[in-house]
Length: 387
Ligand code: NDP
Image (tube, rainbow, N blue to C red; front, side):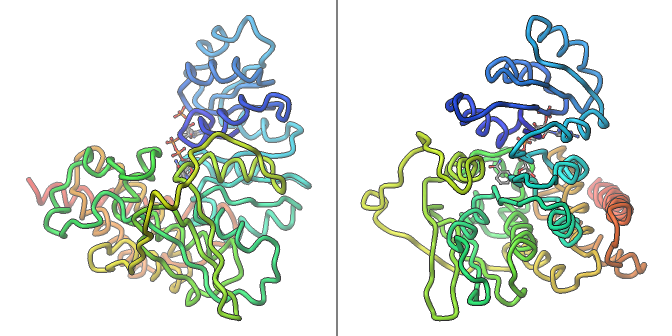
């Protein structure tokens, strides 16, 4: 489990701990949180526990000294942990940091449960090519893509006409742009339906998350940009819909609980029973769907535009957004300035001929780094203008 101490990681560990006869844990990987990593390793009897950040190594080693869990640390140790024999890897590291270990996890015959979005947004074509070349099966963990995966259920893909992702609309669904301009991190972190890590929760509030998901869907399923659609669906009961060439639409529904898509990936193609809340449609009473207002959520329009542009634009979008979200959480920029920074970085990148489709992972990291530097420059300028 890559990113075992995070939101997706903890839900994954819940399911593993509840099914000791079904799973053996080969390796748990986190960045700094050695305390939670030690508790988790003990709870499931993990064979190894790995910290990406070496500063917590001694503390983790001593916390697990009376167990048989092997303790290692450092970026190379994380990559080496992916060489251990296992059937399924949960890839749930947040951000671009997840790229290298997730790529290393793509091994023959292995199922890769992919939660990390950046692999597909920053390096989608390269990532899917590597998965195919290495003979690994990519299973989407993100609830919307998992819904699409379940709805397609192995059907012939030439009949696929449209993929529709649903979005809750986040905490600011009914807010005006003026209200959003003065929104605080606390308000943006208050998601109405889902409990998730802070980066993705802010992305849900800007709806960049849905934009990133459109990019993910484009790489996961054989569909043109024109076949991708988003509905705002505030009940978060229908997670994704697939429309086929005969006009039929299939949808997947369930409670807003990540343990449902995670269960599906852990035991695919079987279904792993879990005690998640069951959806009571009669109690819910109604399901609402509406089209998002792109002027209220410009991040969504930016993501779609990048998908059409190609030439590494989604890599730039992702990097600029990561920096802008961190700056908002640090109260350096306002909420609506997140999309503004991303848009400016995309314009700067186009104007300076940075936009070129990367043909290697090194190329992805280089473009990602350039976009981050541009984002920092834009943020400094915005912050200076405010003073
Ligand atoms: P969190 O922020 O809750 O957790 C991130 C995890 O990654 C932690 O375990 C963290 O360790 C670990 N980590 C961070 N940096 C490194 C690194 N350099 N090397 C190794 N491990 C690292 O994130 P989420 O669980 O919310 O999200 C994980 C991914 O899944 C994201 O890409 C997100 O977009 C995606 N996703 C999340 C969903 C959700 O419901 N949360 C839904 C769908 C997709 P530590 O605790 O030590 O910092």
